[in-house]
Image (tube, rainbow, N blue to C red; front, side, top):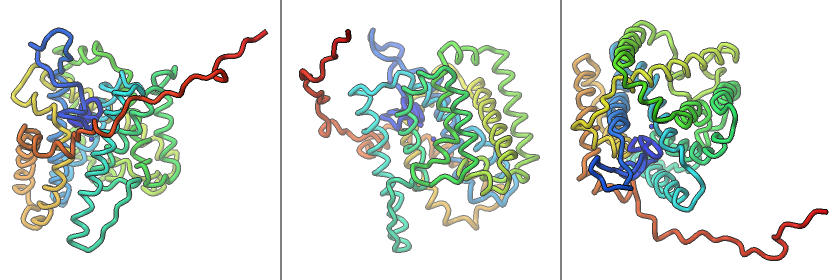
Length: 371
């Protein structure tokens, strides 16, 4: 999903240097300033490595280990970003400042990168197909996050928000939904966003206890082991959340049960991953504040690497791509890259906004007295 979800994605909203999260802050920040949580930044950066490496080995899945690792990572890496985005969106309202961040941190970058990722097809194949309602490649996350955040006030007023979100997710698999607005993923992955909205700091503190960390490590090891066994038996489309049950080849009852299992598995792996994530500041904590840059930019590198597919379809090639994914994730989150591409990832849109216009209250707007 990144800096991105921070206030939005990777804390990301898509955010600015984490327009996805909270504003960057240090423990020594002055009183009153917002202080970033190194725990969440660490989690975002480590998860971004999974995203980038996963895309780099996606074309190498003829190699067994690549297919198994791809399957395992896709079970929870975007659910993790989505959950963190929800957690960091708990205070979202339709106030002027929040609405402006939604536009400048998600809507405008979405348009920019929707066009940018469409240009290679034009130069290589002479096809220019741009549909702002049908997200292409990586941009689906920005579209979905935009819609999730808009819906935040609704979930905060429901008595059983998570149950409703799970119900919508399961029902979304019973009908072929249009690609517009990334509806399948938006509804299918919705429970992870709502789960993030429901979490509180004390819930995350529970994950930092020693015995929970140990349990989390065991769960991840067991998950990898299970993935090595079942990765060929489970259709890849289940972990991509792009299609209805019938399009994957199962009836709605079977599909609903599989989707419920995928939601449960994803949530368990997300919590296990967070449990083993360092809570202290590390060398990559600062990079975690800019994961939206890595998310939106790494796709261009992936498209270039794909042209060397034949030379990389070996266990050694898979290992090289995973290591390259770690390096690429780090580089794309560095300050020089952020300065170079801030205009696209965190555009300054202050010139486009004005003060909120409120209708003047006339006599007809006054409440009538009742007898």
